[in-house]
Structures are given as C-alpha cells and as structure tokens.
Image 1 (tube, helix red, strand yellow):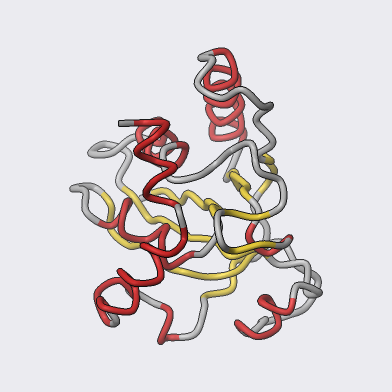
Image 2: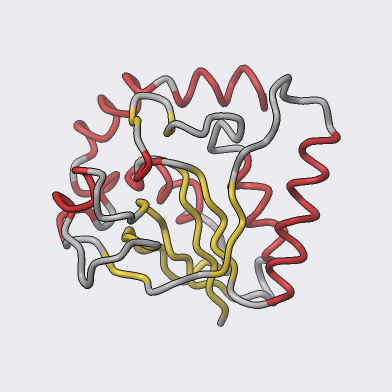
Length: 171
C-alpha cells in the first residue's frame, strides 16, 4: 500500500471522488502543514494554525496508480485559485499536492506542467507541490461526511459552485 495526500478545499468534497474506486483502501479527512500539534477543526477553520484541510488516501498501486489519483485530483479543484476553493476562502482551503517521496514529486510536477500546457485554464496553475508533513486525522464526525450527513453534504456542495466549475472545465 502507498499513501497520497491532497488539499483541494473543503475535505468533505474531496473524499467521495476518490472513495469509489477499486484499489483505494481508505480516504481519511484531516489536516497537514501547520505549526501546532493535533489541531482541531476550529483551529484550522480559524486560519491561524497554518494547516490545510486534506484527504489522505491509502491505495494499492497495483490496482490504482498515483497518476490516476492525480488525474482525479486536478478534476476536483480550481488550480488557478490561490485564495481557497469555491465558497471556502482562506489559506486552510488552498490547493496542495503533498508528496510522499521522490517518485510522487516527479509525477506531480509532470502532471502540473501537462495541465498548464493543455490550455484548459487561462490563468496560471498555482497549486503547490511540497513534501508531506505530519498528517492529523480530522474529528470522527468529518469522516465519510458525504455518507453520514448526505442531505447536508449535497446542500453544501450545491451551494459551493464546485460542480458548475467542474462541468465547465472537464465535462
């Protein structure tokens, strides 16, 4: 098994796209990149902990490649927005690919270059690529939120503008 970690705005919206494939063993919502130990949702939401909302994905590279994960990731975000994602604004909602090792770093950089060269976006790709740091799992009520709180998840996602953006750029 290998690990991948992506920040793409609200972690509630980042679980489901990865959670439905053979070879994806687990998707956990959490936090990465900050300067305090064991942050809470309130710490991160406040915006001064330095953490970013992320999803940590445990996957079997024999069944589902890191390149496939990157393809899914790019299609969930606005990689040109440095100020957050959709309705969620601020540093804790920025886009980051946290890499686990040199091979992931190389593949992530290649995918970013390819996306920029594709002409799909008019503005520059600002998604950061950096080495993974300590992962802090989010509180239990955030895990699998799209399953546990389906109505609220759908309502929040519908208001976010994420789906319209995805349809306008990828479908």
